[in-house]
Image (cartoon, rainbow, N blue to C red; front, side, top):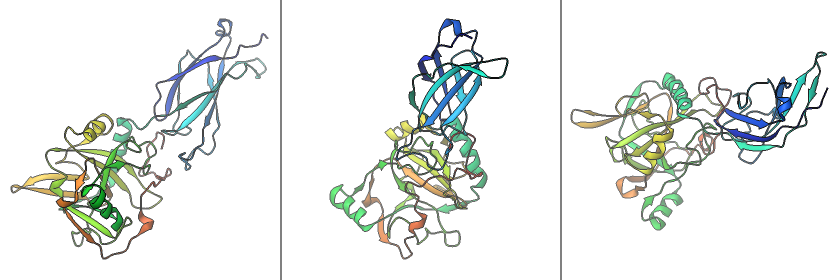
Length: 330
């Protein structure tokens, strides 16, 4: 049988977190002969690779010949925001069951995308299931080292400035390495109604009245839901003043929540004053997208322990947890 031409001029487009479209050129005489495509997909390892998944790549995919371009989809071998290389080979299945194959094409590199809004909506639904009842609170707080707050006072005009979010949480989160903000907490102890006295981030705590950061002129967005091989789960929310750069970023990428009616963090007017509530059964991590002046709150030292083991800095999500994973790339 006459040899097959080698595929060439590979094009990849319509890339998502767990799929891509691929096409290539081959000799006209091969179009009616080819019965199968072989696709060689390799994840390119680097220092930021998601080490918790897809250890079995390179992946060899076999597909019956279809009109090009064709879509390659699979959350079991594609991770979000990950670099891959791909090459293709065409084949004719012969009567004896063996394949006549072409040479391998050139290798093309590409990078998968982040979670889209529809993927985050699936995470949101899963998080709502375990959020639990709502508890009242009155302050947002941020723990850090003494040196951090001294630096803000002496070198930043007494202001905490937004910084780039790290890679903690879901590997496909569109906020990681893209959104600038300041992390705050708001969880309280159910028996005291006060913030816990322990923290993994430092012995010094800045507390600010909730209304300084969250109110009718603030938009609220859901950003992530994850765990770190533990029984408790984290929900990341974003607070962005309406019309701010952070607000524009989130509106394009994240599901927006009704500030008065959602399962995680609410602000309502009751008896003429603003009342705030947070979900009891998840740990909320709040990203505020604007600078915060230390004069708007109070700084003090906590009496508890600095529990470093609970830090979520650059924490990787457990890809095997059925509670907080969805059926797209982790």
